[in-house]
Length: 362
Image (cartoon, rainbow, N blue to C red; front, side, top):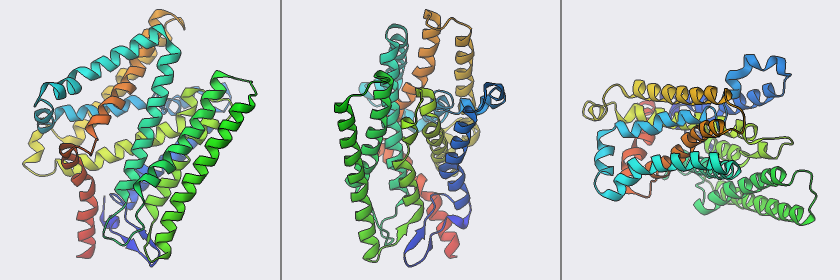
């Protein structure tokens, strides 16, 4: 992260990178190219696929569990533990509820796999959209003469396209080969609503630009990729694991990027760094690769069992449960409506831009 994160501005365009141009491109934008490459590789003949196993792992049910690394990191912070231990309700949410979510995931995988997979998929979509919304908002800067989005319009412009793409996917999964004119009419209506909301958002932004505000280019490009996030869900022949390949890869990399910014600035001073047992970046790396190791172990063991057997479903439930636990934990750990989470995360995500911006002015 270098001084290239300072705002580069023209009359109509500004480039306020969240950390630096190089860092943002690496973690928030380049993963799209990696995900597309992985998707193309999966279409190659089976003979080529063994050498591309790593790329195949990079999907929502493969690399997704590496989300657990940054998420478990919260449990190693002394101040976080003090906050969540203040009353019984918080303690239950912090310690017991994740175990409950994991247990329910295993139960559904064993008893009603279709229901467990459907709920996990929908929860994943909600999780992805909310992260995209948060990153777009983080990119924008108040008091900088930017075209600032209307938050309700921004939220709708991300949600309605996601609902359309995912609805088409589920219809194909549940009613393969069926031609229902009522369903086609419903999809047409969803598409119109999505286009309407996207158009309203664009109109809102460009009205501000025409009135003299600058267009925040990184924010705008990230918003555009977020609108198209779930396009892979409508590609013919998709399964859950392949449909999630592109958005899952992007989502994971962006989440890691956010946490790298947070960890770097939150634990850099002498007082704050003693809130964790050892170096912050090293701790997060250990937790990331440890979580991935657990996932790959359960995945490898599962392949030794007969598909559809109790043991196979049980191990599948453990893998899916890791993703669901992450979705649950992040719903609380990154909820900025609460003062503690806002104060313990937001200033550090913005600090890199502020520090490097000051350097650029010096």
